[in-house]
Image 1 (cartoon, helix red, strand yellow):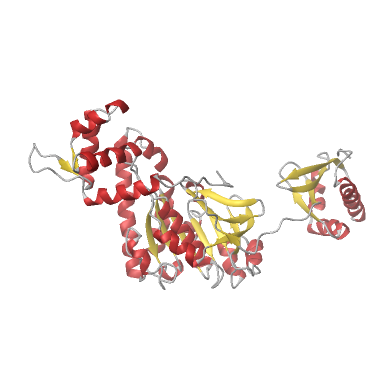
Image 2 (image 1 turned 90 degrees about the horizontal axis):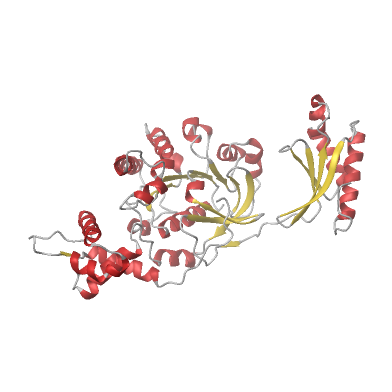
Length: 451
């Protein structure tokens, strides 16, 4: 065997290799192996058994059949063999103790990196993904499964990143009245309110389409590219819907949601749909194809699991997840994970924490603060340009900023040509939030995955 002469798992590897050979002999198959090897990965030790590629292709299915794998695992007893087909045929036997998920995953105190979302802990460590990686998410989970906690965590994180939130919840259990002062619109409870919310989102996507076309001859391919060239960056938008299938009976709702989910990748919209029980009729192909991220917590039946995870095998497995917060995540591949637990104290702390200010650069904030502290709130272009001349500031640049802020309502409109613009209460409020964040110690994210 092509393995090191000194390794703590060498004896176990040799025994496992002999058992694999014996199992194939018992099945009447030739143990035509190319090599054996020991591999360390994510703290686990594996024996890899590579089948000779010259084996007749017509017989490969005999080496990979369920009966053959059962025979191998019967002889391995306390160990488990898996089949890997990524590079030819190989068996993988886990020699070390299998990793285990925690019964309770505590949300880290460290703030996540901008645009990243902490979801929980997987077998390989913390799970944290960029919003563009997650994109649209389909979530299933029975009562007491942790679904509401997961939705709250996603919504709170989006708020901390300065995103625009659009929320819907027919029971108002996950998103109650407290979210009305946080979201971009009141929480939609009724079907009529939800349809109005979708129309508002459709109008916002149309506005963004026009903005993208106005910045250059060749419109940016996505929101990140747009924000690099636009004078005023746009925040991402999150539509989060609990008990989503209760809204789907109204004509046109599924089609509108599907259309919005399709547009999301370019215009900066993420759609998250969750429900206790999903059925195939709830997620037609026109909708399902736009949800590449799937999360299934404990469900009441394998039908819900199969619809959410788009797999009968994993759907059945989801029915047996008894631990609150325990789930199966699909994003490129399937993996078990434990969702972060969000205590009521932590949630209240997140509600009280000031949200991020999207689109206010440090130099812009310092100009506005200078106007408040040294110019009695007047935004005098020449005075500001002179005060920041050492940083390469010009009167033209300050004037363009003043015009943009005036259109946005952050500066007053002068009555006379000789009057100066003044900082409005809205900009004052934003500066207070910016100032609080600027003086808060930076806490970087850890364990980021899926970049």
